[in-house]
Length: 133
Figure 1 (cartoon, rainbow, N blue to C red):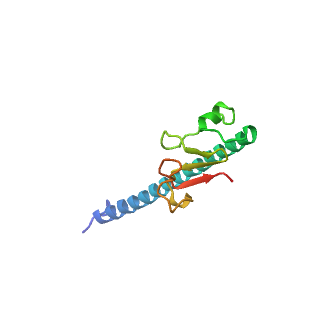
Figure 2: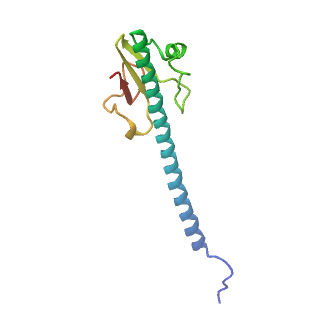
């Protein structure tokens, strides 16, 4: 006769497997949500730089030479940095009347520069690009 004092090995294996699968799904979902959050921050930072560049252009007649020039000119409070790595975004004033802003997005759905592996004008690898309007 069998005693009903505990769980069988099969029951324990099935329970552990279910818990492991649920944990893996939760971790994958959480990491993709973090990537999307960082991409939103990148877009927001680039928009701040774009607005500062446009205000500087209205004031001085030309786009600033760098993001640091926007900070020193009082158009930005501080230089925004990428939320994951300690680097600045790519800003390149092409002429006195045009510029390019670039960033590297983690989530492919957040990109707008799918045909380029490099933004060229920015000197770095990117998949999201803003230009002056």
